[in-house]
Image (cartoon, rainbow, N blue to C red; front, side, top):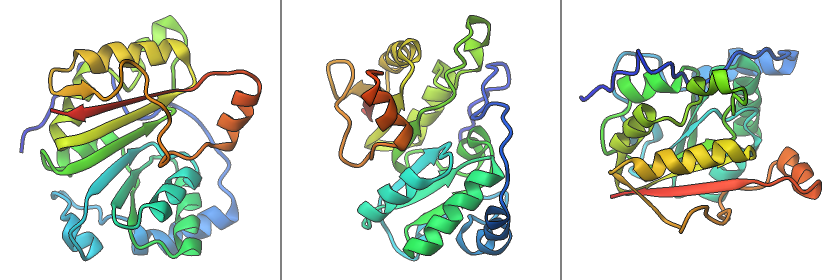
Length: 227
């Protein structure tokens, strides 16, 4: 398997943050992760074995507290989803959603997405990748920490099937402009819109996004397809 070297790119799929871990989230993490998590082993993920069927596979990077991820999985039962997140409160929260909604098409990996893509996902196997509202790292000296940069985008493109899509969304305009520039420069990807795409039906509005839109804040979606 081809591995993309990102050691000198200053990229990781998460920023430093702390969150309160509720008792319910802790309980869900301890009891439900073995049931709904992807086994932690040094091997490529066998999606058909994991989900017990052959279906399009979509990877979501950084699902936060998981509400949107669960809604998408519930609305698209013919697609299988793997959510990648490092923060235990978010993992516990999404595990609760999976259990409450009885979702059979959604699994979780608690790990850095860069490592997951390099070590667990085979080339040309993903029907889609979702990257919603990644940390914008707004200060200029921190821009190198942003996730959507050329080496990582090349890695993402290599894991998509021909025709597979990469869907990014951000509410930070300077980051949206950088995303558009970086994605447009990747030769293996093609923009599905002239520049920014309308929000597709499969991405529900988050409560924070709804609040921002009411205040006049913008949100930018970018959807690129693998050539």
